[in-house]
Length: 441
Image (cartoon, rainbow, N blue to C red):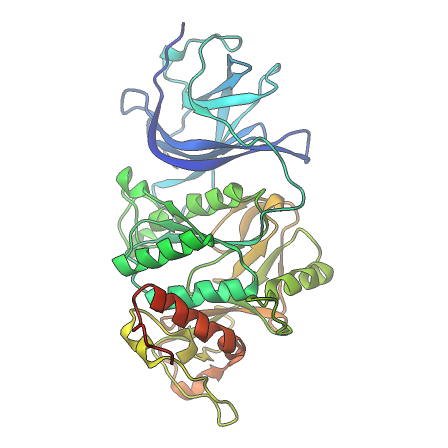
């Protein structure tokens, strides 16, 4: 009997495993637990396994980039242990931090028809022996949900939000989650490190409603995470609290659960410019109208990129005289956070920022690697969406702080949703004790 103590589970979060066999044909998918690798010494132990999926077997991990490590992949097939050599490839979007996201590719040995458990160890660990097949005794994490879907997904649209830390912007969170539902989103995944008690109350509320799944994102327990996107912006070993592995986890976690996926932040909304406001029950479903239009114009299975328009929260101006602001609840001013309906003027698009900080909607089954802005690797690449079809509304601190108010550009598209948005926000805030019970307007 071979005993190899190489995997130490650091959490009980379920992560996704995806099988892609026989050329480019999607074959299978499964799930494992998040674990870290330990060899019993400090040598070759600078790796945190994030998520596994199978091409072969692709292990998404966080690795120390300066180390060159040979890996052994331990696959349990039909109650027999098979061992293959893993090859690591670090994602290019590491932003010069010491640690980065990596794929460890593990070939599936001949005779391994069904992988039930998976583990990874350093090849420098000799305790595992050298026999590469038909070894008794399986360990590692169980592979589950081995079934592919090509249609009839539980969700039409999933939004991946990463990473939430020290979050207190309650009002904008509620407004954005209600807006996403109006657009047709029926799942929002939040990778949470820390937040205020009021924020947690809202997350619990939407979790109970079935809209939100909160993934406790605890990389900070294992490595020194940065709160900046560059080392010069914040000390740490990995970019922005491990945002890149979180995005890729969300991609594979919902690959066969969601028809489409949007990767953007909670202060960003992708709004169609020509959605017919036909309400079905509570929802308007603008994205369901938008995506067929994009597929027809740009092609199916593309990554669709939406232009970033910044609406600075430092400026509050009334709309032009031809427009009227909808009546809002004055009690909103007592709720922590930004009121997106108060910021309807955006910065002009300039050449320096025109093609930066965009966000995307994708068919997740056509993607291999996701990054903060766009994709690193996909089946068909990405296409820019005409801003007159749809664009992104980013309500945040100014990107061009020297602009004067008269240089900003009015855009009242958000007000088109206000008839449905305002009462929905009032209801959520009231039910969570953030508005007086007798508050109507």
